[in-house]
Length: 239
Image 1 (cartoon, one colour):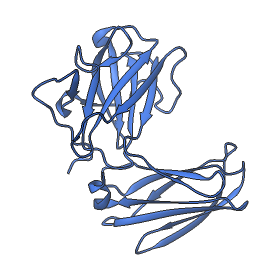
Image 2 (cartoon, helix red, strand yellow; image 1 turned 90 degrees about the vertical axis):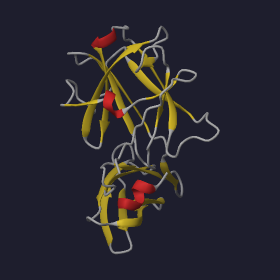
Image 3 (cartoon, one colour; image 1 turned 120 degrees about the horizontal axis):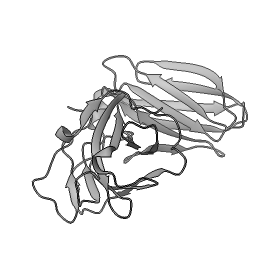
């Protein structure tokens, strides 16, 4: 099973289009730093609308809007980062700044999403570092704990074995004890929250792992949160 299964409809209905995977081309790293903020004067946003009465499993309808770019046709590159790889598609813009993957369509249906999988994208001028980025998780995994503590989990690989757990709501520099648990093992660690009261925790599970996993984080000031999610083959079936 592919991490992203993107199909195509034979018809465009009401401006909504399923983008086939064949339109995307795998590319080298983009000419800009993916982790940088958007260039001054440029922005990109993604809106998700579950407007179908019976949507395909794991499917979402999205609209992507931009500002600060000119409608320069093939000179605009739409980038996606997926499981550590980069993919590129040339696009145009509508008069309102909407990203048109296919001319005349302002909405797109993407399918095959699993829980915790991000749609991480950028719009850039070809051959330039001027760009804008946006990221949305169609089916987020979130948890709220005691006090202001909260957590989210995002899958990072096609195997479902590498996850990024993001913890927030702690005091700057606060010592936080983390426990990562599956049926077969329990691992503990301790680290300090950033100046923003956050911790980014990569979690790697052994090959063949499946079922449920949990990460629990307890701060020295008493704030705690636990987040659970499926891993391995179990994650690839979760919608």
